[in-house]
Amino acid sequence: MFDLSPYNTFGLHVHAKEGVIISNVADLKRVQFDRAIILGRGSDVLFTDDFDGTVIINEIKSLSVEPQGDGKVIIRAGAGLILDELIASLVEKGIYGLENLSLIPGTVGASPIQNVGAYGVEIGDVIKEVVAYDLQRHIQETFTKEQCEFAYRSSYFKTHRSRPLIITQVVFELSKDFKPKLVYKGLSEKTFANAQELRDQIISMRQHKLPDPAKVGNAGSFFKNPIVPHDFALKLKEQYQDMPIYPSEIEGQSKLAAGYLIEKAKCKGITHGNVGTWEQQALVIVNRGNAFPHEVVALAKYIMSEVYNKFGILLEPEVRTFGATGEVSWNNL
Ligand code: FAD
Ligand code: EPU
Image (cartoon, rainbow, N blue to C red; front, side):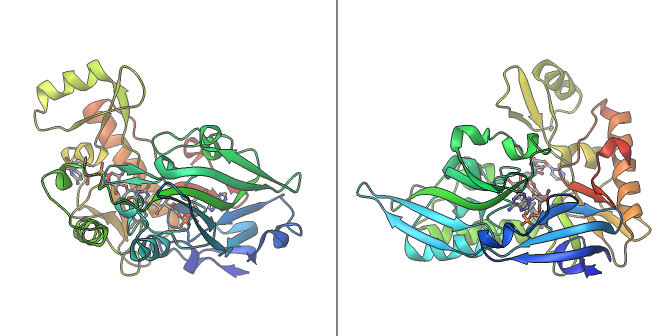
């Protein structure tokens, strides 16, 4: 049995039948794709049961930095590098573009899957290519930015789950010029002399709002922010005048803040058994100590039904859920 406690930031006591650590692409040639799942650091997953298969742990840590003549820099980052460690080292080297994503937990390889985003930047904005290994055909494939089909918390890799693709390398196009992106509400009124100052500000905002998984088990936002028809959003706003509405990349649709809806549905800071929602950010389900997987599932369902009853909006989990035989759709839980 392979202990998954260090590989799920919820801190649930779960196991896999087998664990294989891969440190280069050649290691993947020996992996059978049947009943195998790949993990980075497990900061966006919920195991509802012990997994009766092989967990591949990504430790591919290659890195190349290629300055271009025009002030751009191409970074080829191994998928097993820790994203925040990469960002820290790039800021130190004077290479910019990723600083708004500081302190997002997990690996470089997982970051394109749900197109991680925070504080006005999504990782797809600065990705040039993604290299993935097809475990069924045993070949590497390069996906251009367009082929990655990045969208809010989505990408080709998330919408084509039946393809056993393991991301091995992410290629970023970054810059030697520091042009801060300050569209996020809490950043727009500030000025930053350099990227380290911006990174420090992002880290401080995150530490204020989000629980540190090393101390309190969690997987970040449990739910995605819902996308609803713009007219519906405006109608709700007549009733809830302080409700934030954000533009969506989908025409005629708007994005709402799930944290706001959960708070208004009286589910912020609650405790059910060993689980609860974070006092500073209702979107985060936390392990209050020795939680069981079924408690996380039950609380998530409770929140979904409370929000649905109040607003007629069905929240969709962002966290990926795995059971004994592989990924489980939320409808089957
Ligand atoms: P894992 O959780 O191990 O894997 C996530 C999914 O990707 C799984 O389905 C897994 O099978 C798949 N996967 C992992 N690696 C690969 C690979 N190499 N190839 C193919 N598939 C792979 N996310 C945001 O977008 N913005 C945030 O601000 C943010 N804040 C967070 C804060 C906290 C405190 C926590 C705990 C999480 C937060 N997250 C956030 C979610 C999480 O950090 C990201 O989803 C991250 O990319 C997950 O990385 P990981 O290496 O831990 O992936
Ligand atoms: N809000 C509340 N109550 C809450 C939480 C939020 O009313 O308990 C309101 C806030 O007041 C604010 C709005 O909701 O007006 C948005 O809040 P915030 O800026 O904190 O961001 P979010 O939409 O809740 C998203 C991402 C985070 C990311 C932040 C910062 C999703 C699902 N979540 O949260 O990503 O860090 O923006 O950009 O899109 C993650 O994906 O795991 C994650 C943490």
